[in-house]
Image (cartoon, rainbow, N blue to C red; front, top):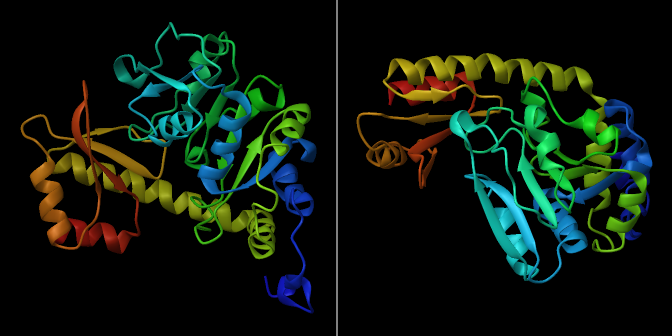
Length: 294
């Protein structure tokens, strides 16, 4: 980033498609650089896909409960949004209605178990593309990049989770180069600034830091899950950097409110058919200790 500040480089517009910055993820993920679209965070790349694939009044589909932004973006485009409930154990259903685009979070939020591998073929039978949103895939045991390399799905990745690059929330979309060329037509002209592009390339090149951070998160995630279970919560096995915890004996809303009063912030969610629960992010060990003791 200091190099990007030298001379008068910030006076000029950035590369509109981040050509240089795309080389780092292409090398790390073993993907054709022409098959990578760089966007400014999750909202940007998901908006680009919705603009490209969804027609007014046409159906757009996702499983439920999942990331709420998919519905918002579809409705902005005037699409008809369709949801399909998860099967038992957070598995995807056998039958999915045809749609212009399917959005599938893998791992899902708030449940976090991986879901794309055993069922993705069934989901690819619809009219539109399957967009696999892998914001948390760096913490999972499996991912859909192999399907993306084969041109069967479109995958999105973020730098803000495992690389802790939240101030530079670049997002990657991996798709066949022919698809990326069409997506570029509907994106904003300069959607990523020069400093974020420089920071993203540098962060991806530091694979040792990525591996170290991932290992720390996985270790603390296991400790967090064990601790919540010991306190009487039912914890879904997680493949992300958070856990989904419920109580079978009572609602968790009072627990959420008391934690908030004590300055400990988790997410409270209540879904029809699933009840309420807490989505607890994997913080540092010191933060987990504070959660137990406060």
